[in-house]
Amino acid sequence: MTAPATGPIQKIVKRNGNVVTYDRDRIATAIFKAAASVGGSDRQTAESLADKVEQIVAGTYGETSIPTVEDIQDLVEETLIKEGHARTARAYILYRARRAEAREGRRLQDQYFDNIPYKKIYEVLRWNMDHGCESVDGINRIIEEGRYPDLAKAVEKRYDEEVALGAEQMLERIPGVRIVIIAGPSSSGKTTTTIKASERLEAAGIKLKAINVDNYFYDLEMHPKDEFGDYDYETPQALDLELINQHLTQLLEGQTIKTPHYDFKTGTRTLDVHEMKIEKNEIILIDSLHGLYDAMTHSIPADQKFRLYIETLGQVRNRDGIFMRWADNRLMRRMIRDSWHRNLQPLQTLTHWHYVRRSELRNIIPFISSVDYVVNSAMPHELPLLKHKLFKFFPEAMETYKDEPKRQDAYIRAKRVHDMLKDMTDMPDDSAISERSLLREFIGGSQYKY
Image 1 (cartoon, rainbow, N blue to C red):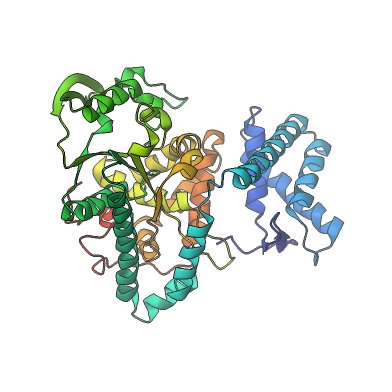
Image 2: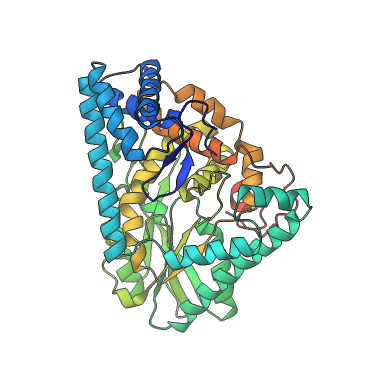
């Protein structure tokens, strides 16, 4: 939830017409990012300029009025120029222009390609409303009344039924379908979804046989680095896509192949290691972050592929009416999983997340319209658990990265999650979570082997 406004401006009107609480920090951060792009590094100056903008807005429109986002941004530009920050003003103007172009691009994309599953989102919201868990206050009420275990059971039942229906649709397309692709962004729950779908198919006499795409990574020394020295595992170009296609074609032709083996400790690949062949009752499974990326399976006809997409299509809002972002939900899952699976501290995951999002927006989201079935893996009852395990890290991140120009992405995400969860009751007890739950993929204690 956005911090309560304490200055002369209390509310603003967003571009979609919604009236929300004004947050001066958003203005300061935008100014700071613009200044950082031209070599600035003084957060205090950005906050001082944001305060001046706020005073000018109040003087221009009156303290009882509700200005629009555009009104405030116009005055930011004027203030930067009047205060002698011309270079920052130019950067800010360019930033606004790029954001406007992005919004227009999304509008056209929504109109012509519909990459956002609106019908699914509506169904999720209706389900949450029917179960009283569409808001922070609603979930708090459920916990207070002792109904948390009931909510956990209901959510798990909904998810299991969605996966089962997806498996049924796969069966209906056999024998035409030769490859099942289960794809989705990081920490959406692909592995558990794959296991549960496999159980349904095996009951019908069909087995999914996975080709481990991770073994097709190029040697780490071939991966690009960024200014922080981090390797980018998130891009599909880090994989040997042509070899994947060659092996898929050979498998469907009945040949035996030998897949590579990738050693994540040494960052090296060895060719021709794992022998693999597809039997008559088996379908190839691709469980991959980039399964929708066409170059990964371009050699296989479209009618031989079934694409299942999974995403945390959560519809839970805070007291300011702002819905939690799907990516923020997944970020928290990964912060927990990385801490025990990859020995990474939560703040390390937070600072790496911009790579994850960049790759998702480039290599996953544009292909959603091509999928055959969508599963929602967001679980409203996980948010109190995630808060209990992670909330302490977000104030630390906000303080640590607030003044670092190159870490503004981490600061913004930390503040957004903090504001979303701060009014939520945390849940220290995870005993209501089944051993077969998707959440166990991230918090541990699953009966499945990951």
